[in-house]
Image (cartoon, helix red, strand yellow):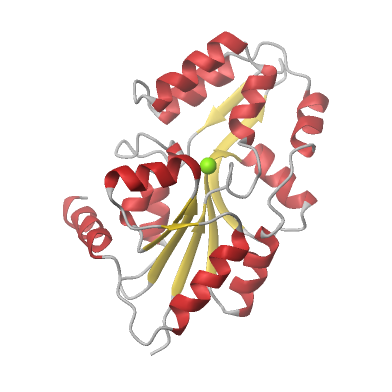
Length: 239
Ligand SMILES: [Mg+2]
């Protein structure tokens, strides 16, 4: 039987080389406040939603052109294009799931000719007083490290017989990876998987990921990750 893989990719720091969400606020927000807010998020004192609300609040005057120029200056990992091509060629559905904002993801995907990628994120508007107004259409109380509950997108977009692949780097992915079969991790997410003893593949860029997926695809027998299956089952039963 043909194996079905679903690929889920984090955006900030995974597709984009820099965390655009954080760096926007470091650039345009009140520096001290921003560092304090991010520290609180990383030590679980505040939720991701509280973090974004406070960060948006820390930006007093925003020049939209400067913001756009700043976003345009941030590069993506160009090997991401290879993964997109690979997923199309092999008929694997690929979703980007981000705890960042549509405002800059749209801008980056437009620039990179990746407009047709399916993605889920938080939303960000700039109002007539140049204030940043965030909103969170995919908020779930159970997901405190990501205001866009990545877990739900993974569960809603994959079936029991399908293999879920997650690729990420950071805080917003920590809760999420528990529900996935194959995890590609770097930076903070890699450390988290080590500490929590979650099986993962380290990666530097998407070419490493493609090579590994290709190998998984060719295995005669491929097991799903048992701990992930248990975690998913808990959700079905409790919610
Ligand atoms: Mg990230």
